[in-house]
Length: 482
Image (cartoon, rainbow, N blue to C red; front, side, top):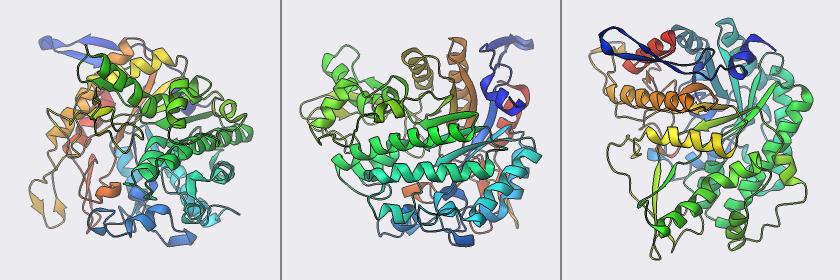
């Protein structure tokens, strides 16, 4: 096993609190804890028509009037496709030990099938080498929502064939990069792809069909299973998937109705993914709920066994908790099909991010503990965590902002790292933390108006300026703690 693999597979699982002078305790993370950052192809690469790249469902969706803020697109984004070398140098300057990036399927197979496009693979080949030359571990996500439009035209993830095509695509990427990349994740947040893409339509491809959302859930998981099998057959060392599990809480802990609402929403958000991945199959109550909306004939014999093949790593994306109440007049949420007339989703309160999301770091501790308890034996990696805030650059120079004092983001990250440390101290096998995001970028339906980056991007000049949070994170990494 390579040294890079050992960083994510060997873990002492011991977090410590070290006394410091002045009575302040310093929190130390375990040896070999992996520190890094994450991005996604469509959000940063740009170069939408370069080197044979085909259109994705997000190219189409972002050009559909009213779907994305002010008609923003990912055509240029952060121009990372042309500026990757400088971006990797910046990662090295900040001390990152790992970088999670996604591969754009339309760059590799412009129509989602057929021979691999060598020019598309060449980019990721250059990026991988640049990372390794700087001592940064590359972590690949094969699908971060940018489905080739040609497959979208054939039904996208509602079509079982898409899962088969995904495995073929995964094999093509591994054939080029597998000699240098150890950690492979198949999907990013299939909850978003299925429910937001096919359920309420706020993400590409913009469909609004509850039955299609559940069909997409299964085919995404099937695609994971097929791709994981293909990667292992090709020799992949570490194969996983990234989910965005929710810490679902009752509005009233003493209410039986609220507990029932938690059970329903937890089933639709968490257990519909985690149980088939890690417990052998879909839970009975979720199957019964789905059957009220669509007959699940899309689940075939052998599918659940394929989906449940062991994984080496589970990626966790966490941003905020959610509170629900059980009410017969509850409006429900169209991102959770079948919750109308049963669930009231409580509006977030307290300090919020610029996305309107509640800031509650304790939710991360609870979530990590719950997953470690309910699905033991799988190492965890925080693959995304961060906050959007209305950053205000400080003094300007002719070349752009010289400083962004994003103290709210620092406080957010500090709180969530403390929550992660607490989970480790309680026995959770957490291997690392990847901040979202390295760069300000295209934030999907929000366009460029929301900024998650620890590095400010001036979208007119493409100038990168590390924010105060970047320098703070640099210090966290250097001391391996807080």
